[in-house]
Image (cartoon, rainbow, N blue to C red; front, side, top):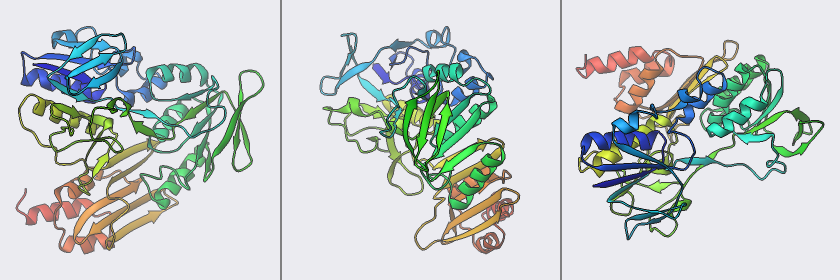
Length: 417
């Protein structure tokens, strides 16, 4: 059996390893288009602050692991998928035949149409090559502008501050991490960052970037201010890598539509990770959830099904946890609530603490918090278990911090111990 995986990220690597266990005699190939061993993008911030070297970002030991597992890793770009002929055309002119194919091509950063984004001082923070440029330009004491304060932006923000630079953040939304936190939570995060010496411009956009004196650039903002910088980093969102699918007949939307087995609309072709639009646990709709735990889970389930060992994906819970210069924030599930639902919140701006619980009937369906790190795993458990809270709902409405008590009370009533 010839298994080919396009994509050398966590989804692809976990899939290859799972396939090897499930099918010891299979021919397994990973094809990645970066000139690096398979690595984790989530490790790049640790590389930026010198906690790890480049090898510390590698998902596995590139010298031994894949050889031991008898998994071939090819550094090449796939130009075309011939779904009817079960064949791949590579950029070097070669072809590869497959019996089962997994598409784990991930996503790529997207940027708004800002004049000056092509200047050598402007970079994304997505690849190891991007990280090398950031390390070169973001020296201690230099001015850096970060465009975008979403989830990815805030992960980068943490690393940049630890490099000892002077940081300005520009966010088009009216708060930080607008797709993860409501106005109260996002506002607390912004206040915290300002207290920590970060220059935050929310409800603001970049009009243009222009070369300035020496090696610097000038960043013009919509609020009329101008920022001088040695480096500009764009973190304004990502998009699934689905262009390769043109002409294949594979159904796509924001990503590749997959069923509960991670199979696409074409037989023998599966998808996993950031490129896959799988079932959302909370809504039952197909959503792209670009986080590494989801990618690994996708890869494992897809591989089991490719090997003929049925396994079902029952949906991914929307989940985000951030450490932003020492302030922990998180959101789970339908943190923004549901129509006709109820909510409970605690807000303490002076202590940078906030918790918000969202209910549908007597089910907890979503939650978000800032500065409240106790029992956040229990929040996830209450949502994923779909436990009927009963009398505990009213108790949580009165005191949303009584999460552990509610969990213990509910599970005991159901006979769990």
